[in-house]
Length: 238
Image (cartoon, rainbow, N blue to C red; front, side, top):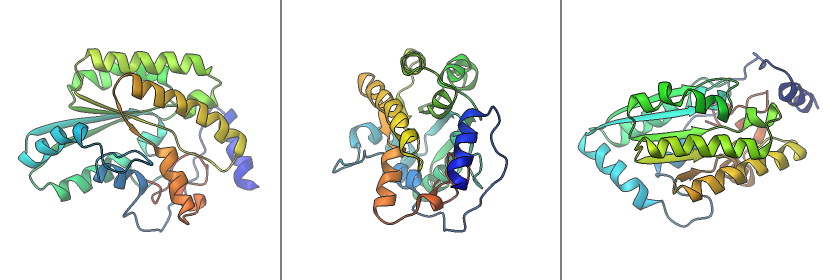
C-alpha cells in the first residue's frame, strides 16, 4: 500500500521524490540493454529489425563516427537509477564492437513533456547532427493531465521535425508499466499513440512496457525492476 500511495503522490505533485532505491540485482541482461544489444526486435516478433539496424551495425563495425541522442524525461535522464540507459547501451555496444566510435548523448530532462521536448529539439538534438535518435515521452504528459490528442499532436510534430531534419534512424520508446491497474490503462492509451506515430512515420519502436510485462511474466518482480517511486526503472530495470 505504501508504494501505491507514493505513486499517486508522484502523479499529482509538481516535484519528484528524492528517495532512491539502488537494487543489488546484477545489471546484465537488463530489458532495454538486451533490446538494443540484439538491435531492436519488437515484442512478439520472431527476428530483429535487420533492415533498419544494418547500416548502424556496419558503421559500428567499421569505426565510422556515430552520434546518437536520446531525448526524453526523467526515465531517459536516469532518475532514481545508479546509471542512465544510454550509459549501459554505450558500454554494451563498445564491448561488442571494439572499433566503434560512438558518442551517445543524453538529452533527458526530468519532468519534461512531449511539448517541452519539441521546444528544445533544435538545441538539444538537431544541432548535434545525430545519426540515430531515441524519443521517450509520456509519463509527465499523463501525470500533468495533458489530453491524449494534445500528446499525439506534440509527439507527431516532434517526429516530423526529426524527419525534416534528415535524421536517418528514429526510435520511439513506450513508457513503463506500474502496479496500479487504472494507471496502466491510461498508460496503454498513450503507448497506443506512440505505436501509431512510429508506424505512420516508419520509426522503430522500443516497447519498454512490453518488455517489463514480459520480464514479470518470466518471474521478475516489478518491485525489483522499478525504483520505489514506481515510475523510474531501477538499476535492474535499466
